[in-house]
Image 1 (cartoon, helix red, strand yellow):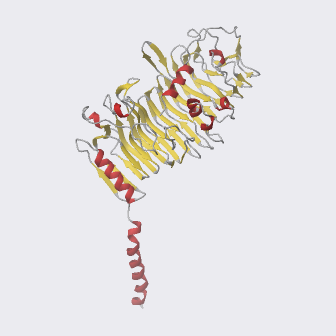
Image 2 (cartoon, one colour):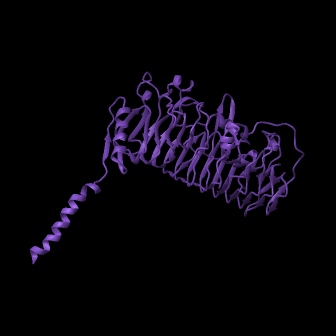
Image 3 (cartoon, helix red, strand yellow):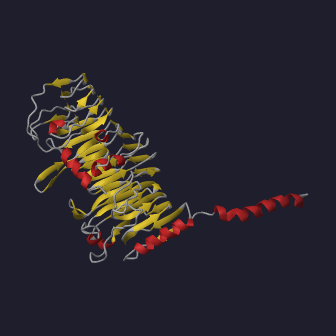
Length: 483
């Protein structure tokens, strides 16, 4: 009887052994620094991991790696180091300035910009490492239109679908020719953009998939640029943006994507900690067909700590701001496409009047709730400003500005000679609602049919004719620098 019972047991065990290879653990491909050019070894490991299939890992040991462009397609796995500061990836010219620089890859299915490590499609988890670009000129300028700086250090390119997650990754630029630095963007996450034979985009870029940048550290010119999310999720949480010219540039997403930026520490020296922009491609190319499709994306910018520092370039003082919102879609006969809530952020502006805590250039129905804004600025919250500064009118309709604490904000018009207050509704504002919090707040209302509750209105002097520089003009220059 016992022998008969053993038969099914042995049969089951044999079947399990035969099936075991199907459940074998994915392979891990190790790379150690060679002391020289590590490009081939890192690329070889990724090629092997892609071939091994989903769940594979490229594991870098502790040490300093020097590489030129590494391009990975359809990788579904992990790219891991031994820890921030222990595993460091640098450009090849960081080893020796005479070595070849990064070249512009001109493959037709890639965005035309230089990067050090790029992922096309796939599902990528990057963790526990540092990218630090040390060479003054990391790029072969002859192959890149004369520019010798990296456009992006790490790039995730959609190819219609790509997901990425960055955890415990530090990325920093060094000295160079891009505003004093050698790289423009720390991380670029952008959609697939097919081009015609002249290199002009033929349709709006779109990237499907979830993206996450959490517990990371970014120091350089710009921290993160994300463009063209479609039916996607983006989370930027718990990260430190250290003295960037621009923290997060989030533009031209569509189709009900959900974007959350929260619990980050941001120090911005030149433009803004967070910029939300719709119509970037259309305004840059003058082509309304490049507007993203509806429905609009939804943004939540909350519980961040933002500090505006300053920088002097060619004798001109620049200072960073907090949050900047612009939706240019109506300029092309299209409906508004930007849906944003800016809530519970702590924003400190650092110099007289250069940038605002929160700037609204154009948009409809934005919600600005419970923020704490202090320091010295033209205004703590400034909405509907275009006409006042001599630019093309851009409507700001139906904003809800409720419960913000600006008791520590001193509004000054010294630099511009224009009237202002802690909250300023410019000539382009209409049907906006402003409700004060528990502390006194002054509001200058130059708009139309706005509603003010529990605030102190200030008298608006006659509009002055001098039209002086404003950060808005500086912001427009970003369009010429985008990848």
